[in-house]
Length: 303
Image (tube, rainbow, N blue to C red; front, side, top):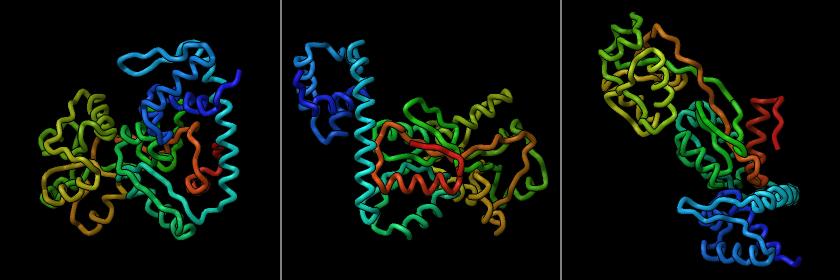
C-alpha cells in the first residue's frame, strides 16, 4: 500500500483535535485542504476513519486503531526532531506561555528574568489567561505550556505539575482598619462589600465552593477581570477581597491596606505548570521548562 506519509501526518492532528479546522491551523494549512487529504487517505486505504457530526468528528473503530499506531510513530518523529533542534543551540527561537496574573506576580517574573539574561536571543510571548483559558490554549497547541493557579482540572494528554504553594488572605482598605483587630467569619462578610474575580475564573469557583461548604453563597459586589485590578480597588475602599499574601504584603507594610483575620481556614492553593505531553516543544521552550522544574522539582521526571 503506497500511501503518502503526509496524509498520515495530517490524520494525526485531525484525530488528536477531533476537528479539521484546528488541525489545519496547527499545520498552517486550510480546512478544505485537510478535508481533501483525509478523503484521499480513506480512499487509498479503503477504510472509513471519521464520522462527521455537527459537533465535529468522531473516529471510527478503524480510525482509533490507526491513530494508536500513528501517534506512537509521531512521538518518535517528534523526539528525533527535538534532538536535531538542540544542535541549533539557543541563540534564537520563541516560547509561547499562558500565565495568570497571580502566577506571573508571585512566581514567574524572576524565572523570566533569569532565562532572558541567559538566553537574550529567545523571544518570549506571554498570554494573559485564566486557568480555564490556559487549559484550552494548551489543548489547542496555541501555547507551549501554561503557568497558572489551582484548582485546575486536566485530562490526558495534559499534565499538571505543582510548582509553588501560596496562601490567600482577606484584606481591606484603610477605612476598614478597625476590622484588623477583629476576626470575621465568612457569614459576617455579607455585611461588607466584597471584591472578587469574575465568575468564569477558577478563583471564583474556588471561593464559591469554599462559601458553599459553609452553607453560604458567594455574592461579590464588584467583579474584576484580572487579579491585578483587585488591589487598586481595595485601596480605593470599594470593599474587602481575598488576595495572595505575596501580592498584598508590600501594601500591608506601607499601611495602605489592612489584613483581616478570618475564623475559617482558607485552603492552600498552588502555582502549577500545565502542558501537553504529546505536543513537541522546541529547544527554547524545553530549556525554559527544564529551568523551572530543576529549580523547584529536583525529583520530577518529564518527557
